[in-house]
Length: 462
View 1 (tube, helix red, strand yellow):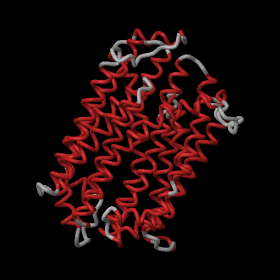
View 2 (tube, rainbow, N blue to C red):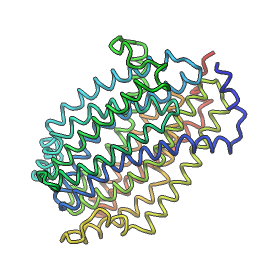
View 3 (cartoon, one colour):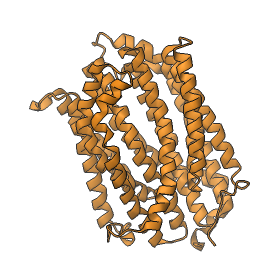
View 4 (cartoon, helix red, strand yellow):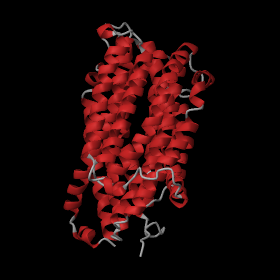
């Protein structure tokens, strides 16, 4: 056991809150900055017109479904690396990160295959052929960003698990700035560049992800902090036990995120059944809600790190206090976000619209009540993601995945469809289903963590 870290067991709850904020804020800022890349795309496509924005929403959803598997698999690195770090096992850290890169490389190769057929898939899901064709044009280019994006996420989580977050934030900020500049030039044909519209946004996505990946590789290779771990040395040598453990922990996380993201993607597809205006309004509202979601997501990652580190130290009380601190801070942030949504819906939505566009007023009118619904599910979404992060710190991922599959699909999606179509509530009904699914998931995941001792989830290495 690492006795130098044992003093954390004696920390007060207030000190745990301070430690959570210290680790969580950089992770939140990183997530928000990363999300702003997508928001920038949405805003600039909204300036092009409703058709381009709606097509972009469909393309982003298809890409995101693939990306979440990388997010889930790489998320497995956080409890594995932080637990190993908690017991000062440098070799275990190295094995986990190396095999994490293997798993991510294999996964991205497989996940890119269906993206070549995105147009056919979207049409089969009831989307308009015109929008589906535009979305495919974006995806044909943007899907090549997934390779560096997957590997970047793995290396980013390696550094975050060791609570080394400043460089991640700097790289992500640079990616956001470069993306905004490239979008402005390539989407609209400014400064003598060709006007590429959706394809211009796709090219920018590829460029910034390669930039981010190369930057973090160079940092890890040359940094004094990460040099002792020798992550890239003999990278080709397999470590099969570590490989299998990553699959065991990471695949359920990927599926859990997939079930949640799939619920939101299904909501986008159902909005497409209603109409183009409605789909564009949904895209704006979901972007705004997604920015807010980055706050509990960042603290959820902090939970995985801090709970996992406490497990590595065999610190039972530290697990409880770290988890409670994350939950309290996250809920306070969620309430603040909900208040902003309720008080300033028009202001937020208008950021995504060109007032000169003939459809802008219609989109704004439809999006406002959706943002009210987003305010309603802020707390539920926060509780479920914080509890999921706490459970991942214990490497408990299989049952939470099952809970998510039930909450989001049989519950959330069914309620969304019934409210929207048979009961005639339209988009508000679809978002009501989102609220229901998140509420059920939040309650069940929190109860599971509360019963962690009775369920035998806390296991220490002796």
